[in-house]
Image (cartoon, rainbow, N blue to C red):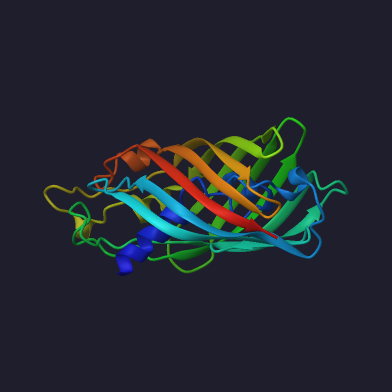
Length: 270
């Protein structure tokens, strides 16, 4: 049960779909929901999306078991001040008058993993979950939206740092269909790669040599969609591809470089 929960949360929060959830603009981009600034309307007070959907992807560890989960979607904002989801949230500390450039800070959870029944990780110590503090900046222009984030773990343990850069652009196809392609890159420090993908000397086996992670860069691209069924209800979906960096792929417990994630669901916007 513990392993299943960890894998479910990893799929939800570590995938490209929710990799930028802590940024209010990118939250809507990644789920295919129309952002307030793009969709129009009065969004004073609390607003956001509540719904659910299914997520499926093959894990990059071990036997590449396909994960399929039905999960809730909770994305909320208060005015243009605060934002949060199931994985964390933050506040905007400064922004221009037209909200085109924003700077913020917040917290985000990062799940760990348990070996479970994976033969490639049998006998390995559990990698515990942590909480990252982050600083972020979002710049919205007529050409694209650019989001940059820097994360540092704030709980004990050598779990390292991460930095991300995401570029996205929304396109309206008629009155009801909205498509949002995006590309991004994620840098992970050596300490972070080593913690989640490294093999410690005491975990070494004849078929699993010791491995120390080094800094790496992951790349991802995808497209999200939003189809409006009514004023409040929409279908949400997307497909996202991640290419993991060499330092991750060279780990003896990793057997897959590319990961494709599919998502389909529905949400109520308020």
